[in-house]
Picture 1 (cartoon, rainbow, N blue to C red):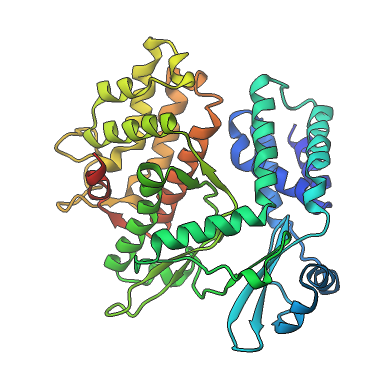
Picture 2 (picture 1 turned 90 degrees about the horizontal axis):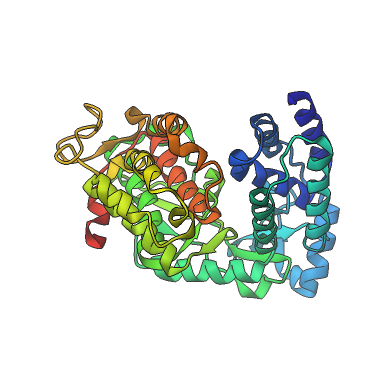
Length: 402
């Protein structure tokens, strides 16, 4: 099976456009319904994107921007490449404003549906994937995500919305959309300088500065669930940069870059998610069981299963608890200021071990896609804090919502 999976991915990797992105999304979300050999092979697609040559990008820009292209000086070498687009730095000649152009590859949007069918047929031919109702539902969800990813009008609107929400918070930077150079296939915004999350310079920062950055990364996820009702669901580190301050007057800032994977959630789902987090805050097993209601996935679950699943959720939210209400908190991972030590906690691996041992795992083998998005976002924030070795008081940031 591994040989078949590697061959399949090698063939996909020779192609450009949406079929590669489909494979990447399947790698990200497919662990619950694809064999491990396939998800491992699909994960290698992230390293196989080759930049489109400048003449082709220039032609696309000319077709999209017309004479406005003459306003700009554009770097021929891309800042970054992806399966659906690549990003180029630019400068506006009139005032020197530094910009970024996200240029969608020609024909990508119109090929999504046919590429989805091709990808599904390739999986069918390998006979490695069970053709179940759950698989079809996930596949349809990926199709919707793909269409949203190439809709730059939605991405521009979402970027403006998050920029407005965070404009008065000095801990965040959201690029400004420059409408003059935006089209259906070109997204233009201000260029924002920063260093990657996993840059070695991050670990050289004093502990207190890393703690504040960690808190800021998780607070976004908390506010998305408790305030805004919509969430950036792609936990990719490439969607974030850090603009370093001076350790005194100028604060470190998280730069939020990509709003193409935004999901809105209905009130009932948000109520369930909030109740689960609140139960974790109180580390209350019965409250966690009680929170598993009012949503089809939980309502269809046998009552006898819920206590076992509650243990998984209680562990996943242990950073929101405290030694006073959670005797199971490992010794030494929370200090007297209730700051949780993410690197020492090994939380992600412990949650995976608990889930795999749990009776609930067979009921949770294919969770609702909405819960997958929310859990992915929190896993991304948890990983952010682990990578920069932050110690954060996460109880404090949700107290106002409890």
